[in-house]
Image 1 (cartoon, rainbow, N blue to C red):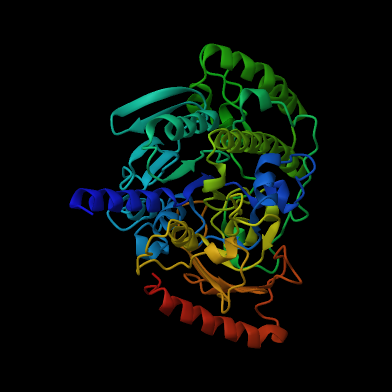
Image 2 (cartoon, one colour):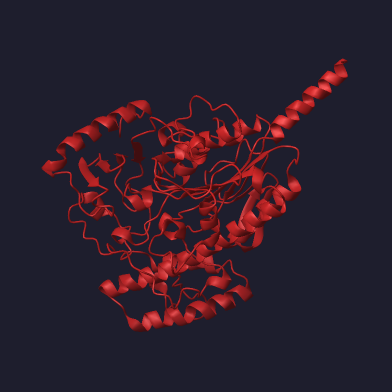
Amino acid sequence: MNLLKITGFFMLFVTTQITAQKNIILILSDDHAYQAISAYGDRFAKIAPTPNIDKLANEGIRFDRSYVGNSICAPSRATILTGKHSHKNGVITLKERFNGNQPTIASVLQTSGYETAVIGKWHLKSDPVGFSYWDILIGQGDYYNSDFKTPKGKSIEKGYVTDVITDKAMNWISEKRDQDKPFMMIIGNKAPHSNWIPPLQYLTTFDEVHIPEPKNLFDNYKTKSLAAGETDMTVEKMPMGWYCQVWSKQGKTPDRYNDFEGALWKRAYGRLSKDQKAIFDKAFDPKNEAFLKANLKGKDLVRWKYQRMMQNYLGCVKSVDDNVGRLTEFLKNQKLDKNTIVIYASDQGLFLGEHGWYDKRMMYEEAFKTPLIAYCPNTIPAKQVNTDLVQNIDYAPTILDFANVKIPEEIQGESLKPLFLGKKVKNWRENLYYQYYEYPAGHQIQKHEGIVGKRYKLIHFYQINAWEFYDLKKDPKEMKNEYDNKKYQKKIKELKNELLKLKVQYQVPKNK
C-alpha cells in the first residue's frame, strides 16, 4: 500500500472516529426551579404542566438530588464550564470576570475535533473562549427585542428572547456548523429569570388560575439562625415594578405607579414595539387598576404579590417548555436525535414563595437543588429516576466522557455517564459541599458553607458563627433547625468532620 493510500485510510479512520462521537446539547435555563417542572411532581404540576421537558425525563433520566455548589448565576455558570468549584474557577460572586483561558468543556472539546457553540445567556463579563461560534445576550438580556453580541458586533433581535435563542440555535445546527464534525452546544435561556415577562400569547394564561401557595409562605424563621430573618428576599418586600409588572406610566399621563419602581419600567416596557405595548396595556392595565383600588395590606398584599409573581413566572416557563419541544422536534427532523445527548438543567434553583422568599443564594433545598434531565434515544435508558447526590461540577466531566475525550486532572467533579446509562456505581459520593460568598450585597444573605448527605444537612453561617442542621427525611421543607437537639449531636459531629474532609479534598481556602 503506497503512502497516499495509507494517509487516506488513516484520515478516513480519524474522521469516522470523530463523527461517531455524540453530539451534546446543554440547555441551561436561568432560575428554573425544579418545582416548576411537572415531571418533578410539585404543586404546579396540574395547573402548569411542562410536557416537552417531561418527555425528555420520561424517555431518559431525571435526577432528583442534583445540586449546585454556589447558588447564584455567574458562579454557577463558571462551575458548569470548568467542572470546578467557585474558589478554583475564580468566579465566587457576581463581581468577578471569568477567565476563559482555563480548561473548559468548550476548549477541551474544540481541541479534540468538536464544533462548539454557545447561544443566549452567557453572563460572565468576558467574551466566550473555546467556542467555534458564539452569539450571546449582553448582560442579563431582555425578554423582548434584546441585544445580542457576536465577534462581529452587536445587534437588536426582534421578538421574544426564548424564541429568538432557539431559532439561532437551530439555524447554527442546520446552516452554520461544520457538518463533518460532532458538536457541543450550550443554549443559554434568559428565562425564567426575573423580571418575569411572559410572551404575548401567555400574558393572561394564568389570570384565572389560583396558584397554590407553599405551606411555608409565612415562615417565621422561629428556629432558624439570624441569617434567615436578616434577608430582604421576601415576597413581602419584593419590588412591585420589577417582579410584579406594576409599572410607572411615563410622560404626560399621571405618575400613578411612582412608588412601584418606574425606572425599571423604562427598561422592560420601553423595549416593546408600539403593537406589543398595546397588547401589554390591554393585559396589564385592568389588573393594575384593580390592584390599586383594592388597597391591599399585610398578608393579603403578600398573597396578591405571590399570585402575580407566579402568573408571570409560569408564563415564562411555558415558553421555555415550548422551545424545548421545538428543538427536540427539529433534531428529529434533522435525523440528529439518536446521536445527540440533550441535557436540560438550570444554573440553580429558585424559591417560589417557600419560606416567604423569591430569589436563590441560600443552601435550602429550593435554591440549592436544580433540575437535571438527560435524553438520548438508544443511549440513555428511558424512565429512569436517579437519587444519587450529583452536582454542577459533574456536568463538564460527563460531557467530556460522552465525547470520549480525556478529562483534565484539575476537574473536581465526577462523570455522570455511568448513571446516565443506568449503571450502579460503587462508592459514589456520600456528601456534597456548598459555599456562598456574596455579603453584604445580594439580598443581605450571609456568607455560608455546608454539607448535605443522603438524609442530613449542615449549614454554617461562618461570619456570625451560626449553625443550622436539618433532618431532610423528617423535615423535607427545612422548617425546624435541629442543631441544638441532643438527639442529633453525634450526627452533627460526623458532618462537621466530613465537611472538613471535603474542604481538604476540594482545596478550599480559609473562609474570610
